[in-house]
Image (tube, rainbow, N blue to C red; front, side, top):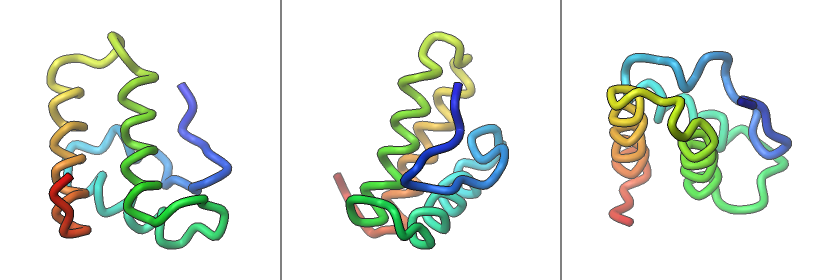
Length: 83
């Protein structure tokens, strides 16, 4: 499982944090600092989170998957998005 990207420089252990809001805030910071992303910060952050969830697949426990899905909701709130 990779936690690096040419588009975003992620903070170490971002996806293993216990607080979904902390995950979302970290992804938002990384997306807004990046100069190499190809889309807007919200889409970059959400794409990175979705990519991680999809790549981890069945290796994620139910609790981990739920925490990461809640992080998506937190990311939407931070960017005031409803999609």
